[in-house]
Length: 140
Image (cartoon, rainbow, N blue to C red; front, side):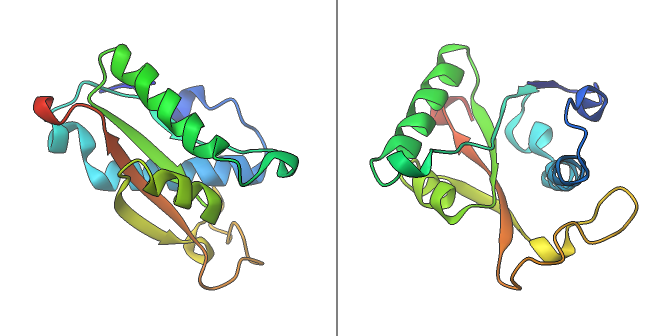
């Protein structure tokens, strides 16, 4: 979770170059979207990095993960939750829950903290999705 006015980058527990670069890109996109003002928020929960073991894929588990995570966030009083992913499988699961894409960032443009390309091996058409699930449409 994040609070307005508190730098969330200070609490990043991930230390690998890829994770740091992912979060740098994520928070850059978050800043660009101006969600606090756009939706009148004071707090924003974040969803990213869902995965399903290959042995259990294509059984609707990612869809169920999003469903339960959204219900949990709504039960805690949140109106909006941010969502970010790279995987086309996560993208397909999010589409079942009315994902609203706010930014689509090509992976080849994602940089690490030193300005190097984060995923130089990424295909040119792969991207990071960043957007929201609206949990309480009456409150927005």
